[in-house]
Image (cartoon, rainbow, N blue to C red; front, side, top):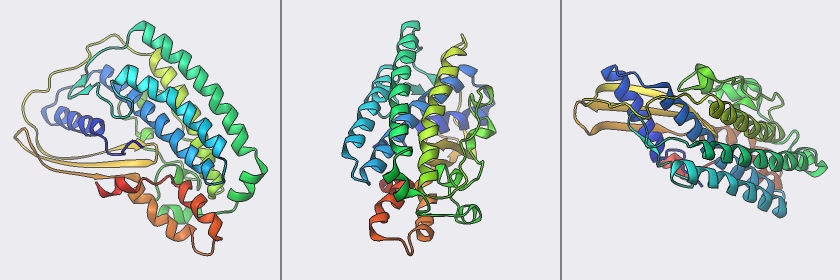
Length: 297
């Protein structure tokens, strides 16, 4: 599974910090390139998490179908970003290479296939009686408790909060039609539903970004070594990804700290799990899609 604090994320933060400190404007092209990268990675992680969620019910065949669709996302990542998981196209100040017209057409075709497959799996899961019996009213977390416990991402939005870092318009999101996906029931079904529909949303945002991709330089030179400190937040598939960076005027960072969304969402399990039935434990845990190794970063 892709680590939430990937090297591409680190490069993105360092580039934004450097631009802010030395007042070098980043071209809009950098913003669109970064958004496309995050969305592609988000699609990959989202399909993996939904597959595990299906596997928790014993739906092994559905799990394999999610995995099949995820391969299409991996193909897009590899063809456009240089790697199946870790993005290799980003550099400080921009991206290494452009998207060719034939690549864009191919991506749009793959996205159409992916969307059709995901729509079928969405109906299979969300309309299934067994799934609803195992998720509705299970792992409930009220709107007030979600905020009090510091939940993030679909775990937070599944309890009725319209909170998403992309609403602040970083990178190219200010130029895209983005509206958070929100459900109000606060149970495992609501959190799963948010994730299912965020995949559709990601596909729409990629299409919009591709159709509005401007002609501009691929990268700008970022002169000098930054000095000072900065924080930056982006929306990752599991929720808010928080960075703290401190630089001392050299080419080496003095301090770098990352807080992943799983770190924020795990405490919510202390509220969801007490009193539940033993077979519901894996369903509740996977409803927040945890990446335990990411919390060690």
